Amino acid sequence: MSKKIGIIGAGGMVHYHVAGFRSAGAEVVAIADPNMAAAEKTAEREGIAHTFNSADALLKAVPELSAVSIIVPNKFHAPLALQALKAGKHVFCEKPPALNAREGKAMADAAAKGKRTLMFNFNNRARPESYAIREYIAKGEIGCINSAQAKWVRRAGIPGFGGWFTTKALSGGGPVIDLLHMLDLALYFMDYPEPEWVLAQTFDTFITDKTFKGPWGIPDVQKGGTTDVESAAHGFVRFKTGQVVSLQMSWAEMVAREEVSVTFQGTKAGGLVRRLFERDGLDDTANDTCELYTHDHGRPSNRCIVVPADPSMGRIRSAANFVAVMEGREEPLNTPMQAVSLMKIIDALYASAQTGKPVKC
Image (cartoon, rainbow, N blue to C red):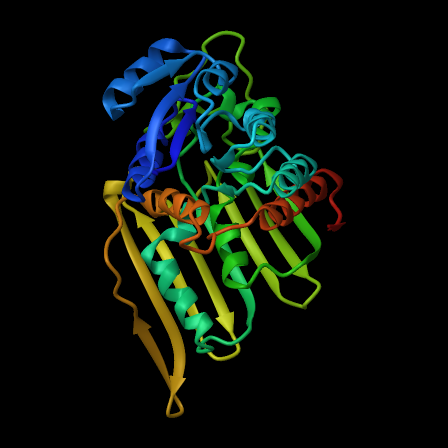
């Protein structure tokens, strides 16, 4: 019998979640959103039979659900995940895992207690480039990754003004928490070492300048909206193993163009996974690169790794992995405790930026 999944939130990622779940053989049977018009429109577009105006109504009306998918503003990730886990459902949640590590740990504990799968849509782990790099790592061809540089930068990519993205109480922060994918990917390549301390600085330059708005996102709130998050951040993480990561994340910063990348230096080889955009925020203008840097016969050798194109940036494959994990067919691409470790780093990054000092994790 196929797994039945309900979706909470009619956000922009619904299409990818639905496509991924269905590709793995699951049924998407219901969607809930306080905005019933949005729920009904999305249900019609995606062929979802039932709509509800709340998670409560969905869980009560469709008790046979195996899992729920959470696509809502960041503030509601933890409460909805905890509600679903306590109702005995598996959970696939959009990033970030939560507003902070404390919430993330509560989610991880609830999943462990209920013996349920809890996964997050760290979709860049599911890109063909990432699968390729992990294969080289598994075969010992890269060695220990001593250092990595995680970057997601935009020149003009603020996702609206005054809405939930720019309201810290709802989002948890700006690009640091919104664009944490590359930090996660760097840690994934490094096998998620335990963080020791973080040094970081955030900047709010351009955060109220509407000429730096991205070509997508939510509409501006004209009256009464809040914009109290950073526009850019730079930081450095040291791990207890001695490995290090530097990071750069921005919605609005004086860079050439949007870049999404992880560069790393291993004891046997280095490498790069990168997506460069001709126009900020528009996936159809992007070019992907996957490379390894080695020494062959005493000479530098750069390898271009050719993988199939994935316009979804791993989003469909990530959702499919969740279903396969529930059914015992695959290992999870991410774990709850990795999510907690990531949120500890995010917490420390913000704390360091506020204090101007290194912060222990």
